[in-house]
Image (cartoon, rainbow, N blue to C red):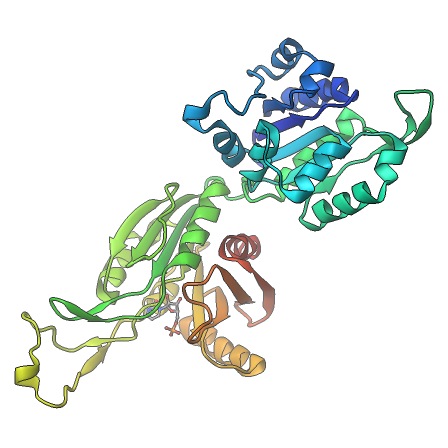
Length: 403
Ligand code: C5P
């Protein structure tokens, strides 16, 4: 196996059709290629092929019962750790259940509890394959990103022939490996050290008050989680995060821009890729009062004098070592698309970073939302990505274009 052909955690799901005996070949091909295979069979699959055969071939216990291993929340554990899931054979019934998102046995529950790419190898009689229900269900699953391998045309279980025969194990195993290579757990960042800053800085006014912004750190946390999933060793420096901290990253908490600056400066040279997603305050109060500012003393008006914070992104871009990639963010309220791009290109120039991720923010846009819409510019100001989606899928798309 080469670096790009990392050992994968493959869930081989088997549903109840006569082609279940060919699933043995799928599991065998994947094991021989060096991958870790976990078989999850439906109850009816185990009537076609015995668990001892499957266990001997996969070198792992076969799971089938949703009510076994409940303490370890088995379906979630298997689903979350999978790099890719294949269902071979995928019966018409299984396809229908997946299309509506049913979760009534271990296999369907595992699939629903996973973000891993899904490969389906349908096997059924021609009439069932061509039935409008199956056609519609397959279309739904394809549209959600599932890879459908086969079915081939050929001799079916009875004396009839036609489309519905499960694809051959080698073809299915190849599709599984290809799907994993495009999935969120792909190992393309193996060996890379990634630093992500996230959240919004708070600039203290006095012991209890601050000047802040509405960034929650969700996009940055998603970038950290996505990079770690793809094999990177990740450090997340978070300023006042209002989101879950990914367990897969080293985490350093900071609050003000000055603290963020000092922490980044001290650590930055250790990293290959630096993503500055934090919303850093451009100014901080010139004086921080040591006790609470009192209205009794301030009177009718309070004037705050603010001084400029160091520009962390510009400073680390200027001092970066050869091969280090630095990514900045630009959150802008400009409504016009071409004006937004012009602002971004100016910022890219001033900051001197390698890539700039531009997104629009506003009273209801950008912050504290599950989704995001971004445009990524390279050093020369060319658009290398324009995408929308969940913050995690946007994170993966951003990582795709950074190397
Ligand atoms: O200039 P502006 O704040 O729009 O730039 C945004 C980008 O610069 C972000 O990547 C942010 O993390 C970074 N930044 C910084 N230091 C500052 C201000 C912004 O690193 N003082």
